Image (cartoon, rainbow, N blue to C red; front, top):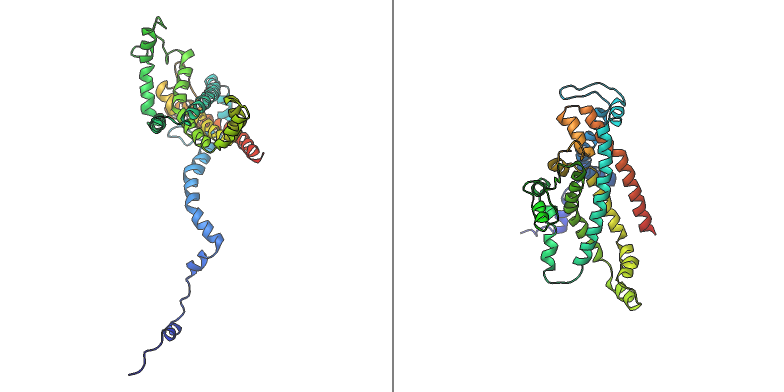
Length: 314
């Protein structure tokens, strides 16, 4: 009986397996990078680039519902610029964003500092403060709408019970109070995001720095201002950046609470663009109002990113 061939002989007799063309392409880094990025580029193109380009086209056209329209240049922008309601909406948007962001930052910082201490039930409280952020915006806003109701308002009842008011307060039907009421709801909803993010930043601060400062005689405020705040500033700026973008383009909260009323006193860019572009069918003018937000947000984002890079590089 002949001896069995050795393993090395069998391997050498097998034909060499040559990689296919596609496999050889995968070995090129540039092709592989383009292949991996292509799904992201397709999604960005479909859901961001195309709607943005379509919005630009609509803003310079006479498009209405059922009518594709023709190119009319900057006519829509000139028209909305001279619109008193648009001017009011622009003013409201700036006030709404600035006031709400300041209160969310201040209250969120206080809450984060409190939650950074050790006490019984800390985990339960940390989880519970996220509820306003977790509950769907429309649902929680309907609850606030009931609480602001002039007839059945629990807020009015409480104030009246303790003798703080003598008659009902029309929180949402008074043009002088409506925007403030909307800002209160926005602060309630956005504050947990600030608190949790700042709390995560606080836990990265080395406690030995505070102990050394305390041994040198620094009080609580000095330790916060000289140690905590500088170390927390990059995180704070990122949180403020996201909050400004979200608040500036807010729609659901204002639309459910007031619908832009009373007498257009609480319209923001988004709600007024919806009213003109969708409710009345003037797509061109609605798109022009929406795009009015873009230059302002662009400048804000550039300034904040520049400041964040400067702080991180310092």
